[in-house]
Image (cartoon, rainbow, N blue to C red; front, top):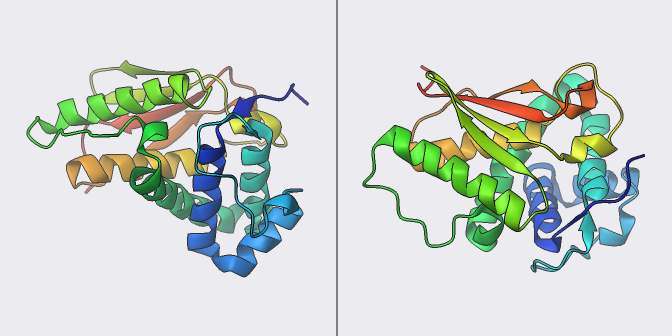
Length: 205
């Protein structure tokens, strides 16, 4: 396994709150037991930015959800968990999203999209210990994550970071009021150098 990589308590806590929101208390207990995270049952990490959680734990929680539902069923659940992760983060931990005190409503939609992606990437670097950059092409933005919890999960034959897809989908919906079809087009768990998410500039129908 790769060596441990720390992340803030708040980042793992927000994920566990989102899992509980989607799966209920008993489902969350099953996930924590299966993921080797039973110490967090009824005892989530504190709401702070101390680097006491790890990427491996975050990945283990995601993997346990996938194992619980099976690869087909897990996609929809992990997307829902990702969307809830954004909402819990926005409400309780805006620092880990880079969205504390953000006021963008007056700006054009594409500008808002780019700004929020850049804010989230900067917060990933500054707060979450996760090197992330945003690239822009004519028809899409690319959110490129160079260290991902999937690195600590079993290898997958296709991209598996649905929680991040859900977070990005919900962030776009929150900032624009529209749904965007976010896709993970490269994934570290399939052997890519980075996890790459494509966010089209046009909303889905």
